[in-house]
Amino acid sequence: MLRIGSKAPDFTATTTQGTIRFHEWIGDGWCVLFSHPKDFTPVCTTELGYMAGLQPEFARRNCKIIGLSVDSVEDHSRWAQDIKDATGHLPSYPMIGDSDLAVAKLYGMLPEDAGETAKGRTAADNQTVRTVFVIGPDKLVKAMISYPMSTGRNFDEVLRVIDSAQLTAKHKVATPVNWKQGEDVIIVPTVSDDEARQKYPGGWKSPKPYIRIVAQPK
Image (tube, rainbow, N blue to C red; front, top):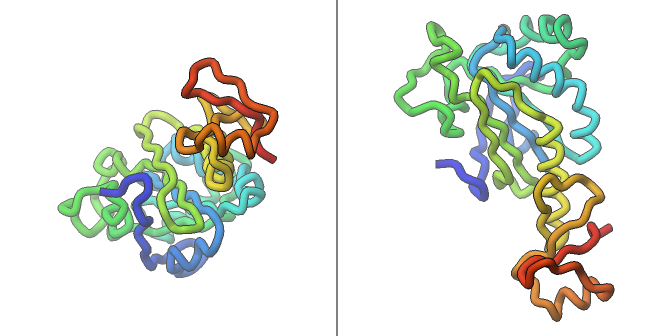
């Protein structure tokens, strides 16, 4: 089972921008892989368009985005115009064709006995193919967020998760509830008070002995 901290499975797949080897395509940056149960579905159409509009924000964080839907690349290409018509944004990121269900099964979103073709399958059959995977430069899964088909995903929250993951990968801190870029952070418990005093000579706020709050490191 894929978990946070697992190695993101590598694969070769055809996309709307040609054939890719996934780990090679990610390179030395971050990646968001977000999946969809089927093409030409209403909620997913809004999501793909919104992500197209947010793509510069992901790029600013050295993060590539790639979609996956349990249909063919040809269907994805036809769907793209609908997405632009409905949302005003044409996806310029790749969409993986997964008509043989291989990637969905590799990432644990469909069971192994789901078959080997998308033909005849409905969105309800594929409803578990609805996960956002945040993958780091080390190709480890940093976050997994799954949604039901009836709930559009909050991709601003995915940006917030990436901001937190990138900050906490660089500094020995954690981010508190509802944290946003620039707000106070928490020194992680593995850092001793002596070590913390060296890094934060101005001290910290401590509403409880195990909570040490400091300004976000630069």
